[in-house]
Image 1 (cartoon, rainbow, N blue to C red):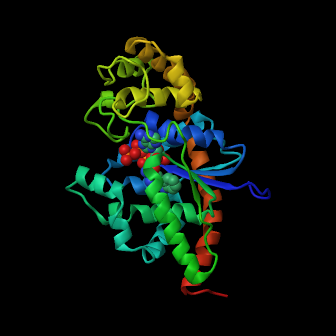
Image 2 (image 1 turned 90 degrees about the vertical axis):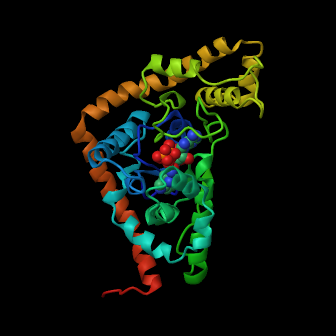
Image 3 (image 1 turned 60 degrees about the vertical axis):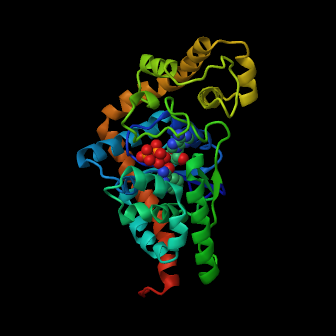
Length: 335
Ligand code: ATP
Ligand code: LTN
């Protein structure tokens, strides 16, 4: 991937559960589509995942499965870098240094920290608090130009830019300042049962609220059939129609049609017919990924080879930035 002058894309996903349709439409689908135009680096963010308690055996398995899923979606480990965050030591090292360039006032404003603290009131740990700093380090180590994420990560991208700018203003141009890449239709997929809140893979209270990428076709269709709507009986976008608007967004994002086109397509449809069409479209999109996943997840040796080679390639790039950073802050430099 070196030697050309393509820009660099970096993104990551936590192995905190089976990825949801939200993860797919907000992030993974774009990762796939951006591969031709950019040099890409994609990670399983397992260091982020332990900010919430995880079962060790499950975490290890999910991490491997997430890498298998990346491959199933069509991310290419020959042309790009696919790796596991904890396999590259530079992440932990730079996170400490960047912690010393981040204000508590900034971290106090992070809405994800507030949400997660409320959800895990018995485990409000320092890692959960400095989560955005670890994330900033991920991005900055690779001199990334663009970070494709869902809308919920916008605030974390902003703090990353602030930290990088602050460091650069003291030490010169060490970090590239990255831009977020947030899709139009898939940026914030909401829960099917609770369309006021984002669909989240780690939610376990209501299985009907979340579509998992690996759900069987009939499960997907049934979940969509049961999705909360309203009593207005008209398929259109509206602030007062969060359920229908969410389904329209899902449909647009899956098919690549514009929101207006999708709305026009279902004019005059009943909710039942509309939901059936959305279900079909989602199944059609996910089925090929699911069958690839069956193959990749059964080939542990290959997936682990991708992980090891990816980590080596990532570490090489990360080390360059880290060495520069350590030198700048005044850590020893040996001849
Ligand atoms: P968790 O439930 O463990 O907090 P999550 O489902 O929110 O996880 P992450 O691993 O934190 O997912 O995020 C991976 C990517 O998916 C990020 O780019 C994030 O913005 C995106 N994403 C997550 N949820 C949604 C959603 N509902 N709609 C669109 N994008 C989403
Ligand atoms: N916090 C991110 C996952 C993540 C990430 C990153 C995304 C960890 N490191 C670097 C983009 C770039 C999330 O989506 N919750």
